[in-house]
Image (cartoon, rainbow, N blue to C red):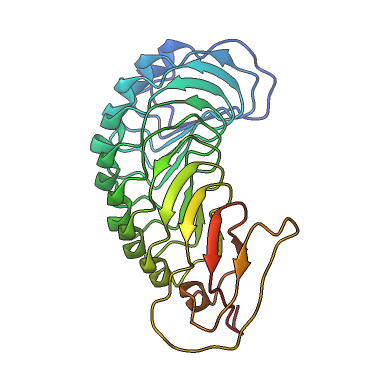
Length: 268
């Protein structure tokens, strides 16, 4: 009944109960923030009527059911935070097709299935994507390489397959890339060396094979690296692509099938 309501912020209260479908009548609502409020509910499709909404933050509750396709009508959406619930089903591709102003899409720690739609390329403003800790399948869309504003891509602990697309090297704003604990395979693309802004790179727990890619033949001093289980063997004198990523603070390549030359530049 409060038709002029612009911001509804109720997070951090033990509210319980369900999300009322009548919230969809608040046509001027810009922010819906009910995180960590013990909500036990499905997501009412009527929330798709909130066509002025910029921030939907319903994380850390006990929400279940699927993401309503009607959410794609919220073309003003900037932040979509739904992590730490029990939401299943796939991510509607229409959300990427229509919600092109998205900056943050965070759905980690749910039960989401299906693949990541190639329509994600429509979200040119996307800076932060976190789909970790779900049941996602399929491959990493090569279109992610065209997302020049993307700074963080977290997809750890899913069931992703296929290779690391070489196009990833075009996403030069990336600072955090974590695709650990999946079923990715093949050789690491040389284009990783183009991600010069990376602060954290985690590719552990996959099936990556071959040698660490070398972008050129420049020689560097040898540094031998081995883990406690002696699962890898790195030696030689050719320059590794990783050595050009001088901003790295975290590098995790453990539990793969990599071998051959690997050197660490003094700047790392």
